[in-house]
Image (cartoon, rainbow, N blue to C red; front, side, top):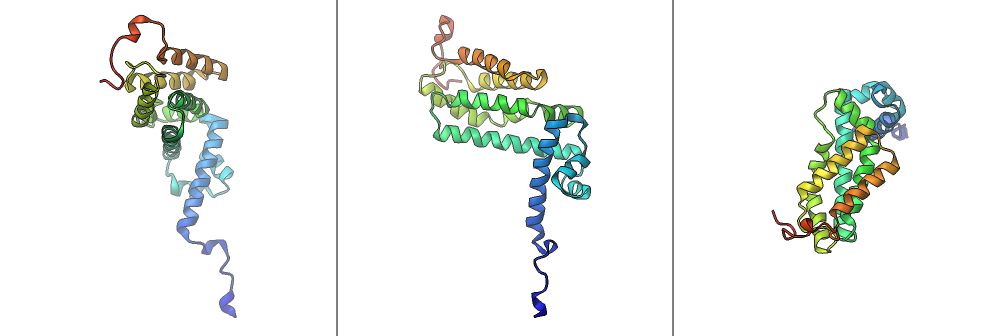
Length: 209
C-alpha cells in the first residue's frame, strides 16, 4: 500500500519532457516580453512571465543573445512552413504575393526583437532569415510565372532583394499598417506580368538564369 505514495508529484515527471515544456514556455514568454518592452526587457522579466526560476532560463539560454537567436530561429522556421504550405496548397497566381505580405507583417511584428539583436551584437540581420527562404521563394516564383501572374524575367534574387528591403524598412522605419500595405502594393505592381512598361516585357523565359 505504501508503494502508492505520491508518484504524481511534479518533480517525478520525465525530466526531458519537463525541460521541453519549460523551453517552449520561456520562448513564448520572451517573444511577448520583447515585443512589449523591446531592448529594455530583462531575462528576469522573461522568467517571471514564463513562471520559471531565472536559473531555469539560464540553463536553456546561457545569455540573452542565445535567447534572442532562438526566437529568430523559431520565426525563420514558421516562415519556411508558411512558404511550403502556400507552395503546396495555395493558388499559384497569388501564393507568392500572399507569402511576401505575410513575411513583411512578421518583420513588423518582431521589430523590437531584431533591434535588440542588432544592439547586442548577435550576428542576425533582417535579411538573414530571408536568405534561408530562397528555395521556398524560388518554388513560389516559378509557380507564379507558370500561372502568368509574375513577369517572366524576374529571378528569385530580385524577389529576395525586394523582400529584404521591405522587411528592413518595416523593421527600422516602424512602418504602420497602411504604409506597409501601400509599399508592398507598389512592389507587386512592378512584379506583375501585366506591367505596361515595354522594356520589362521582353526578355528572359521563366526561371532563366
